[in-house]
Length: 385
Image (tube, rainbow, N blue to C red; front, side, top):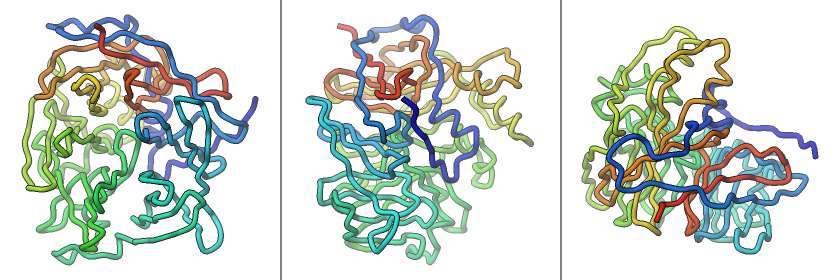
């Protein structure tokens, strides 16, 4: 079956398209990394999600709903597909492109209920509330709202929702993750935008750690290799933020405003550092040569966290960068509830869309390229008993 696949990556450079959508190939062993493991993982049965003729296997955003329904953005039809993983049934949420209910430029969503689906539009920093029929129920252009210092959003933070940096809505508070915007005096060049529906205002949180240097140096890092940040929520409701260049993880408590730092490093020294580049080719080389922490995930079924790291490729021909970006090795770091490293597992060979990951009772699901366009494919890994 042949399908027309159009991937909207507004604002993403070629490097980001290859890294986030085409993914990368794992290590060759599928074994525990060489360190003091107390836990490791094993592969379980893969998951195949059936697709109809108008749905592509390639997606830039997905959300697991109630541990059993996989929702993902389908660019060709410009809709959200909901697949029930228990019985295989599929429904779709219409997003209108024309008329009074039109919402264009969607880059992420948060499905709360059939009557409450929030959409995020990157360029206007717009959030729009629709129902499952695509009827528009609310709209806010956050870039038109000043913060308490009188600054506009475009100068504070640049949210870009991805599966591993999800758009989350909790009790009327919207969390959007991405990278820093331009530094403005008196304003945090943060990685998180928090919007309060009731108060009608926003703020930035989660400034970059010291490894990124001074505020004016942050923007010199590779934007989608090292500046784009990821997060999950802890069972206590704290944000747990992953900065790709930092060995540490960082928590932020939305209720108290408290920030804490935890060492959650890979077992080998990473020495991730800023490399100033003058060309796209140099940017590729920088990414390939360095370690890079790419995401953090909580497994409530085992009360552990999984931190994903991509490890360096030492010797390479940069003219083969597309293949090299796909073959950069991937390791899962297993962390306990206190964020201590208690095991590592190198993924076996495959082309992983490592930006698309979800966890349910069956294990950690990582999207991989399928040879059959009738299915979206996931390899599944779980804690070894």
